[in-house]
Length: 117
Image (tube, rainbow, N blue to C red; front, side, top):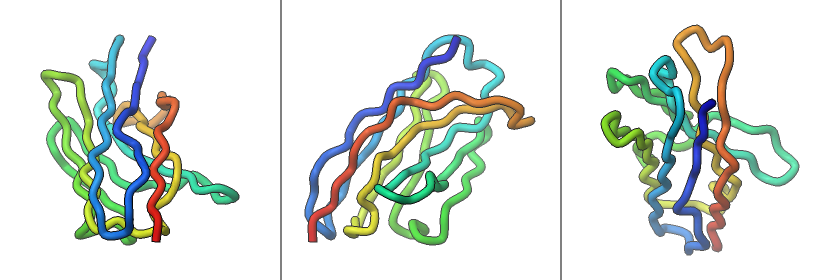
């Protein structure tokens, strides 16, 4: 079984920064793709950023240039550095892990990020 535990969510003012962390445990050796997704109230869950074990990254257009995803494979950690935060970034942020085939996946429980204007 795989467990993903997010942390780092908080209430910040617009223009501020936060760093989210995701700790992975269990049988994660086949889970090449790690990612951050978010869901705002009344909206669908959406991609924020993904990163492969080789370090290839992908970002949503709305966060490019402001957010940076990284991972430490030895520590089984994935991070999301968020800068220049905007009220529109307010959401619950979820960590996701999946294999290259994307045939199955695991989610964390989420961490709340609130950006005040």
